[in-house]
Image (cartoon, rainbow, N blue to C red; front, side):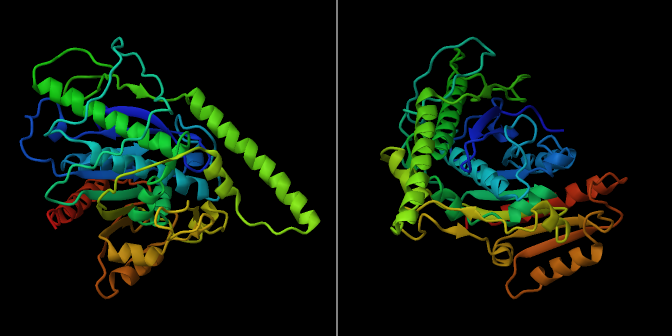
Length: 425
């Protein structure tokens, strides 16, 4: 199975601040036994989401781990996380999938920022460290710390990003907004908000890893505040980062919540008196949170999608209580999206215009083989479509049958290699 993660950590969900548990795994190319790179690392990353939490789904799911291991072996950094209500993540399943969609957007935003900040081949901006004993969890990142505005290191090729999921995780994946909108959610953040904490976590972890990696290769073995668990280095207990919010963040969030209550009360009074409401609760939240923090533009990654045992109606409808899976997006810096915009992803357009791979068994318990095949053929048959699929004979939804795991892994390997063939484009 997967090696020990390089990082265990928590981030807040942009939906409602619920803490989500996440992991990042580094490939052998970025292990401490690998030689220091003299050329920029070709950045590749993949995020995989797990099955339905109420049925036991979590990031430790064997199918998620199997796919992650295959992708990791091709030099990708891999990220996994627990939706709310799964594993050690807080909260509970929302039943409409709207909160889970925001959870995925939160982790994907963190992951893209983390990926872009990594620089194993060149010195990074200096970072202050506080010495700690080995194995001691790090304290939360202070929310008063300013989010870095440093421009990202350019490479000769675009970042390769795979967003995927298994079962319920694939359902959420299909409803993700574009990568541009995911990044836009973290592009202009207010001090003390979940978005700011996510950015800070990505900056903090990536910059510390850069420092530790370079120190290792320069022969400096001194302890820093970061204790990296790298399976190739021999670590066995990955450090857990986060878990408690800072006082500044807690007060900021409580302030926004209190002002939100005041605003709702004011709106009710205005309605009774016949006044029109010129604004939104979201506008007030942005104003109350404090000064805006700037952000340097980030190059968009080349995004592909991986769907393992995708869910289709009617089971997909039951998983979302027959509601539309939408995400309430924040106001963009360019003004393209009003603060009250609710985004419904164009699933068909996204899956055909980006490299997408769906793999399923012909004995899937939740969705009939006929329906899955018809759906896949419809997407793959469109003019210029980049959608591909594989039907595995004898495989069920859980991939327990003899020999099917190997076939699934081989199929994922072939597709990942096809995705990697686009590097440099």
